[in-house]
Image (cartoon, rainbow, N blue to C red; front, top):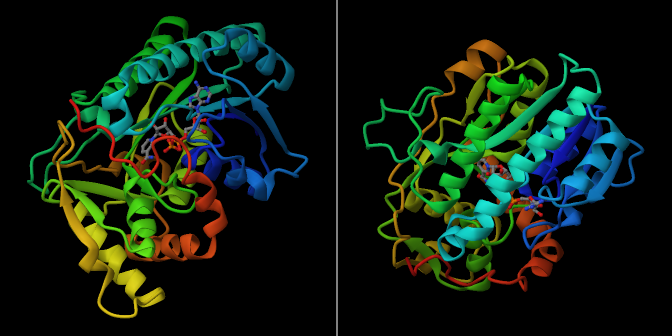
Length: 349
Ligand SMILES: NC(=O)c1ccc[n+]([C@@H]2O[C@H](COP(=O)([O-])OP(=O)(O)OC[C@H]3O[C@@H](n4cnc5c(N)ncnc54)[C@H](O)[C@@H]3O)[C@@H](O)[C@H]2O)c1
């Protein structure tokens, strides 16, 4: 299959690019190379004859038209987005521009291309979204996000992703564009940009710095290893029903405090300190404004209809992740000087 991946130099997009090439697909990686991008993420496949890179912005219609006409993909996996909730609190405008206007521009370019190609039924526009569009759950473990949970986004980031989800569904209903959508829980794994919780904790721990926990650390997230997410996305784009959405999650709910303690225990094992535990560095800091209490995915639909299951437990995935950061200091050291990395963002609501 020839796939155009938007945002393929980011965290999840690059995992999709690497896995798709490994499975024999042809990939065109379209990325604007914002602060969150790193072409080293795709270095393992960059020399493949099946790989091409196009630096372009999803808001640039002329560039999109040229790239689609030139490469003629059979599917678009749309991951390009502004993705950091804390940055969306400080500067929501970029999130509206990229996540809503950018998705609209890409949808229009895809629609023109699909129509010019004779409306092939097998074409797919796969929109990759987040569970954060569903809002915040109560503590009751029986209550989880399903595909029919009403949208209730509560941060500028999740509101902009919700807007993009609605546009994608509208382009299917109105123009017949063959779309599929996925809403996934929190990812972690190799190549995670060092402003997100898991890498922040690993890298601060190694540097002997405080391990910042927002509020009291009781906020619950449902963690999925990024390579399992990439596997699910390649399954949905090939086997998912047109117009349908699929929730993707690892059924691994952890409070932020538990997650950080687990990371500290793994680090204590793999890179012991001279004395004490990395957990001694845990520090509670001012909470994020509007911090959602709990996210949890019910993945019944993707499991029963498409047969997908995650391949690793959260314990195994976190261990692999910590080991990857220990083995790849050159990768993360190069990113630590990027604007805003290492600073506390999103506190001034
Ligand atoms: N990280 C998570 O836990 C998670 C969970 C569920 C869904 N998602 C969704 O998955 C997608 C990828 O997330 P991620 O964590 O890999 O993000 P990321 O921030 O690591 O990567 C985003 C990529 O998109 C590119 N990009 C940004 N604006 C662009 C534009 N205007 N034009 C072209 N490229 C642009 C960036 O350069 C970067 O390479 C996003 O749509 C996000 O909403 C993320």
